[in-house]
Image 1 (cartoon, rainbow, N blue to C red):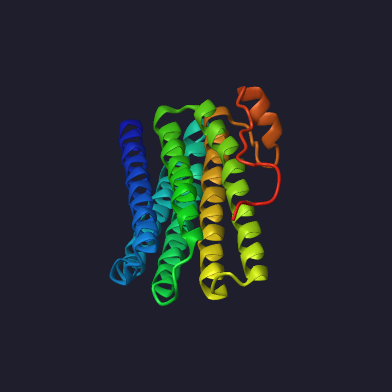
Image 2: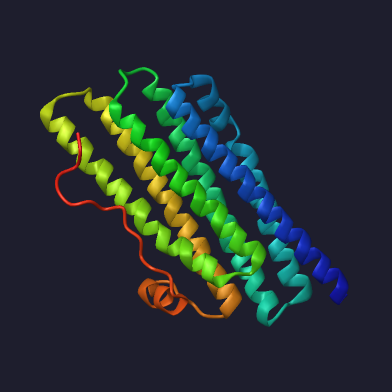
Length: 239
């Protein structure tokens, strides 16, 4: 029975990792749709949301089955609890990719904005967070997970910078407000994806260390020796 349980745990881990790859791919396609103003690609991302939802439900059912049948304790119990939470975060990331794709569809109807050039940089930072957090998952690496928590500050700063730029351009009336607000929506969705990656990182540290670090970011970064990077620059946002 113990050997069977371990095999089922490994299978569950693989399913979670496959879902993470699928969600990252959907996010990449949604951002590509924004950059290329590709309505067909945006609609493809939106149509694929049902598949992500189905995988999320299947993983949840598997977690609940293992909890009921094997009644695990200690590290195995922590793994299943974290798998349930990570699964939910991944499903929400998939929803956010759909939201970005929907905005890409709408952006294709309005004049282009120079602020669109800011989105790929933010998207790359968020994608790196997703890859890194699942590298931490595979390597059982709490420090790597803590680095993801630190990276979230950079993404937050990028979102604040985008807000400042949009407000400045709306006030000046230089560009169509609709395009600017849609881009602001994309930025906000990316910031939320980063938040979900951070949630996963916090849950991984709990799984590895048995310590709940949520709401104690400064302490866990200090313990892990990870600096708090920042992309902020002084002065008004560039035009």
